[in-house]
Amino acid sequence: MDFNLTKEQELLRDGLTKFLSTRYDLEESRSAAKTGAGWQPEIWRAFAAELGIIGATLPEDVGGIGGGPVELMIITEALGHALVIEPYIDTVVVAGGLLRRAGGAKATSLLGQIVSGSAVVALAASEAEFGDRWRDVATTAERDSDGWILHGRKTVAMSAPLATHLLLTASTPEGLSLFLISLDTAVSGLTLRGYRTIDDRRAADLELDGVRLPADALLGEAGKAWPSLEQARDEGAAAVCSEAVGCMRKVLADTVEYSKQRQQFGVPISSFQVLAHRMVDMYIELEQAAAAVLLAVLHLEDEPAVRAKSVSAAKATVGRAARFIGQQAVQLHGGMGMTEELAIGHYFKRLTAMQYEFGTTDHHVMRYAELTR
Image 1 (tube, rainbow, N blue to C red):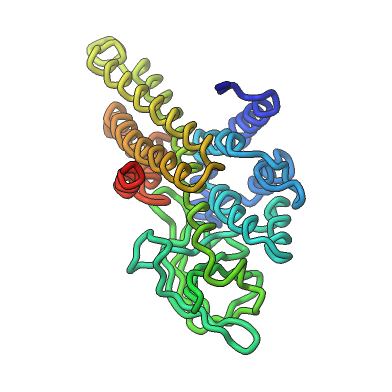
Image 2: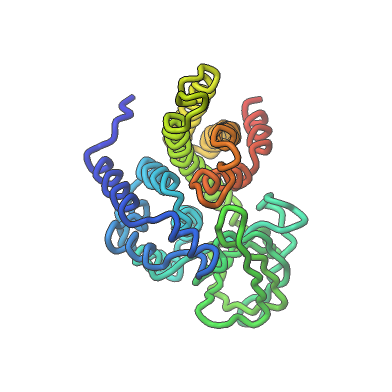
């Protein structure tokens, strides 16, 4: 099998890498996360208009480029390397996939807005009593004379405070269903409590108390949302794994460079064999994770069982690697590793959070075991 990138894929990688290295400043992004709107809208618009990465993996009939999983891997790894906080995975990968599979005029129109950079879409699927088990919901949607009435609560809806639209799961008489809520105007009965997460992202808890939606707010068929949600979850997990590889490459490179500059007993600490061996172990973990991510990406468009098995293998492998590499990098940097002044501390927080997104490391280990019986 040929694992080399095509000429077009190389151009995508090089163009995005150059943009991020020259125009995406870590200090500015952290400032926006902590004291501003939580992100940089001008960067998002540049992703759409100048680079075209927002639509790179979305269909051509909505203005996208129609790229596949490899393009997704290239983009997310580069975003991870630069520690980008803008909601690419939440909006393009997860929400974009759900909208594409749902079809219909409303979904198609919103996909076009995503490609142009004018819409940010977040998914609210998790509930406190069920954790990250998206299939189990207590939120209900009842038919009204001219639409739907929703009641319930959602927790840790990533990127919801930044969103112009929400995708929300609810139980209907037919089963699990998916609904679209526009946030362009105030929604009566919807309370959104936003907060900043440990890795400088934005999330929200939602309360729905008699939220009224029109009939066409239902996306796809009532009761038939789970297969698409399961696929979106796997695609999001694969994208986060690829992002983690980008983060780990940066963390390892910074740690190696620091070890060459930091001196102890008059010599660089990189000359100490025990520390050199530790950095070799970090490199081995990174390459194992990168190989697992590539396997998962190449199976994203396969049948569900094959896709699920490869994604869980990648998530488990990346979870172990992220924990090991992050902890070793912080220790090798000493107390400075956890300060706000060094990039390594921010990367460590992101690598820690990644271990819990789209299913924990333990969840995917158990899922892989079940799929291989």
